[in-house]
Image (cartoon, rainbow, N blue to C red; front, side, top):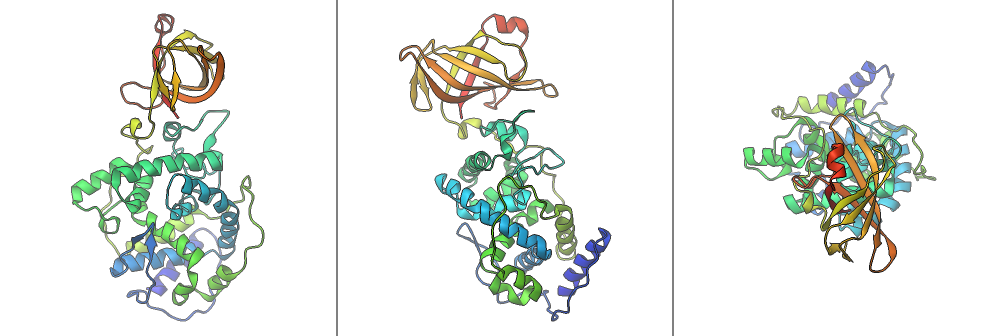
Length: 395
């Protein structure tokens, strides 16, 4: 099996025009993997007693450590970014193991963009990012902000865990979407990630996360499975770290995915499932955002990004725990206009209280009252003039 994996690595490098002369390494049969240390993801045990699971993990370890110089760079990037990510995870009570997700999603590159439009450190789709409170427009994309995008990802991960009851399943749902995952669970009557038959990307997703975790913190236990040159890179002290705004390329996802896909194809013949949807669905936005207000349009600016529109609250209530009253003024900005979907995105940052005669910071977004999703249909002019009433959710 070791020969198979190494052969696949060399073959993939050759296909990409990369020359490589492997150093002589002792032969090792990976067809039967024994002696692995216990592995956990967020406190949930990985069933390494299952040989298929053990082989998949070792395959991911070999693959993720195969590019020596690049792996050292990603360790440097993590040394700079993890101290920022970890406190945010703790704030939302998300296990620290999730800090490895953006390594798999984007190699910790803020400007990473997928062919489908997912972007940033946590690879969020535009609609999903807006649902989670981020600004996504032609002039500003908060998916590229490490702090704000991590907070948004934590809100989504908390929602997924509340729905699924398992951090392992939450990680899988982050990759494939909760709708796809729940569909597979219902069809297969199986709730354990390691025994579910999922699409190829999701089927190897958690193993890639686990590989980074084990290589970063427990690589010595895998010495029999890793070449000596890789062990030397892993034991090398990290000197300095990559700054947050650095966009130095690290890992080629195309290369890494091809190696893993080829290796696993020889071991497991799992049926292909539906592809990842274009966006991570939030079936009920109220599960993520609590509270909301109704407001009536009082003054409309031009229909273009950056314009400020003024709304009057239509009744007393609470917004983000603060009392608000009928007649209070809501200052909303046109954040984006999506002509393809015919949607308008309005975001409010300030509220003027008639009672207190003061202006307060209050982040809200206009939502479709029928679905609870951020973004509303572009209005007709006569509808706007007649006193357009919108529902707003606190971010």
